[in-house]
Image 1 (cartoon, one colour):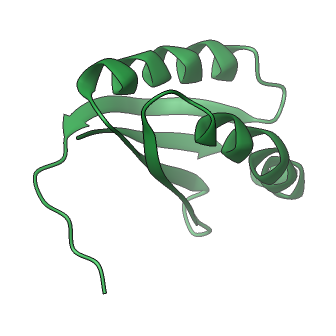
Image 2 (tube, one colour):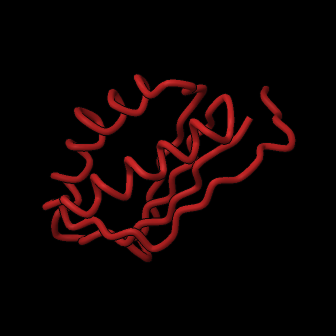
Length: 96
């Protein structure tokens, strides 16, 4: 498995709009991505940064998702800027 790890700078003034867009558009779209396994989105209120970790079946699917995120974020009007995106190999998993 591989994952997309993203860090995003968020405009604090648009937080409510960003959360609505996340729940209504981003999560459903990512869930339908070929190779999707799991996704996690988080937000640090102190720094106004969002952290995403999206697990996919393989490296090809993860790289495709990175390109989709880059394209969609470039067109965003929701005050979101990419700080970093990486495609990484998932080495281990732990669940309760």
